[in-house]
Image 1 (cartoon, rainbow, N blue to C red):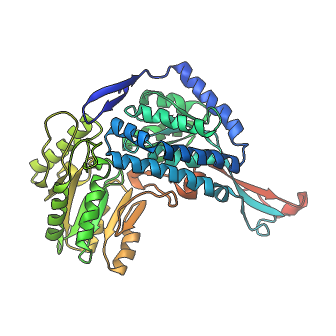
Image 2 (image 1 turned 120 degrees about the vertical axis):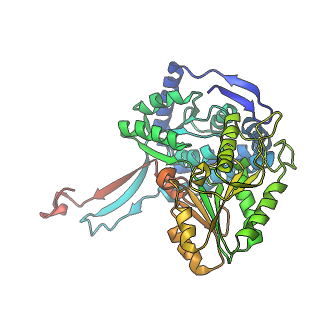
Image 3 (image 1 turned 30 degrees about the vertical axis):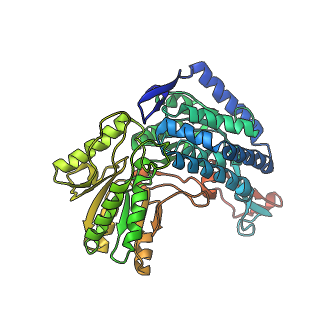
Length: 470
């Protein structure tokens, strides 16, 4: 895939880049390694000053940065503005909280026959981040802010269709004051990932992307014995029970399915509705979806912009056509528009069965599948009946059901009576084929730290005659 900015609203290539040479890649890794030697010796307070400066730059440049993201991948301008603001918020969150998150944690010294015993969190070095195009700023920032605040350095291999956003990220951290090489964008294709991750100066990797990309990264990292954090696909359930507020559920369902033009790993994709309220919910939901305005993502009145690529649009249309061929009913949408740009209408499909691709596959666009169930147990079985486990929604006002859903839904994130989203304060990640490890919160910061045990004794005799290794 060429490294280029192609406006998905028009299909026009606006700017292209030559991939970095082997020599340029090696020099970038060397700079990251050298920067780590300086960065991890700085104080948390100094790094917080730089991170706050990065937040100030993001706020000051929000509108131009949002316009760039919209041009590169098609999200609405309003959504892009909100994404920039969210990134600034995350920078400030880690600037404020990193010292507490990285503080030594005392252990019971008496129990381990020590004068002092504690856990210390220390950075590990240069981390490779392989990132997707759908949230081109936020996906990177939720790794970069905690990693840099911990004292690590970052090497970014961004998606090939958002090169200008990738270069902007490097520029922001440089202008904020971080040392040269602390965060570097690698303009390379996916074929260079093996070379970068195999380099001994690169200590770990994080990836947000497809299941296939995750398997590839994990295979390389396993061979090299390096840590990975993987946030992969999702086919998130949105369960609606009889006690739910149907108007509110249908309203949130529309946003949850069509946020980011339907291109979000944690977007609700499978709407699992109890038969007692199925027809009422389906009517409200389909009406809401059909009312969304598709068009120019820079227009303030647009709800849904184009998909990021022509191939992405072709894929979701093929999934819809496959469902129809196997007996599905389309309540709204489902037709591929003609003309410029890679637009697709908000679509609701029902009467699904396991023979259809949509039954278990992730649909990465504004297409919703409706599933009818007759009980709580059936709802959970359908919700958990995919290889994925990233996020899940449940709508019920019954406290007992709320508690059961929190336990029974097999996902890394369960949101009850609300839309799944990510917050700096909460850990984020999945289970099953949705990946492993966590981003955000203190857990996300510590993923790329050496959790070091420190034991301090009075002298050689402290361990005692009964001490034994391991």
